[in-house]
Image 1 (spheres, protein in one colour):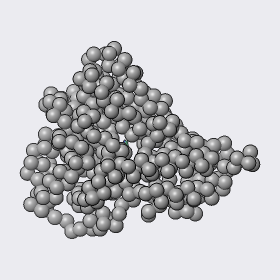
Image 2: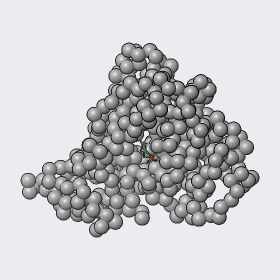
Image 3: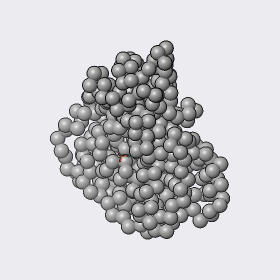
Length: 366
Ligand SMILES: *Cc1c(COP(=O)(O)O)cnc(C)c1O
């Protein structure tokens, strides 16, 4: 359904879906070896990195777990900067594996502050790594990762980034911003079905990895590296997702990364302008609003659950609600991957009809 406008899974172009129907091949044979080397080389261009990139068969959360178990030892102090639902998930994973987490958590909807991060790093010199969400999908907020990175690197700490809903859509030059491990997932901006996480690993991350003692097996970066050298993955990968990814990456490189980033910036602005023109308010401050997902604050009288039902049943457009404490308080429009300004126009036209039916009073009637 092309009316799927949630922040992942996202719609896939027909060519990508057709690749999902290709016959299986030997994942330890030369043909697959060629594809995985090609896919990895293309991913490096889109990650803007000369470091390593690996494909892990899992959703984004598996990638986040991979970061923790490959980089840390039990008892390691980490500063976990969270601005929403996914920041808290990253925090929880670190805690579950025995890291000593120092939380720097913000009210949902806010952006992380570099001065707070500097103060936290100053007051605890033993911190080994900083966990950060680049784009917080639950609130529609993008952190200023370039500035955050420069603070983290002032203190020479590892920078571990959840870029699941930003990489490939919002500019994130992994090497230039010194991201040590960066995670994304196939079903977000990559126009590919769910099933694969993609992670980059910097030279500094490899040094940390060599000393990191958390138990790991499935996610071990050393195993991933050794197998990639012979054109394989350690375990059977989601072969069809790799096929789909190979087609999607070809399309992305044809469009060009700067054009993709600019398109998302235009689409993001169109979404925000559209929301405001309907008399609704943005949940996030506009200077940190995300170009891949827009969170819309609920107005008095507006029943978001009813709105999402009307949008789905009468307009064939699927939007997302709020997560956890934001349930009923916001709804979200996903606009990442295969999306244009026309798609935003379609959503806004449908919202114009659906909003009054879902209880929103128009300005004049109030
Ligand atoms: C989607 C998302 C996740 C979780 O990914 P899954 O693929 O559902 O495991 C984590 N962080 C962010 C920022 C996301 O957008």
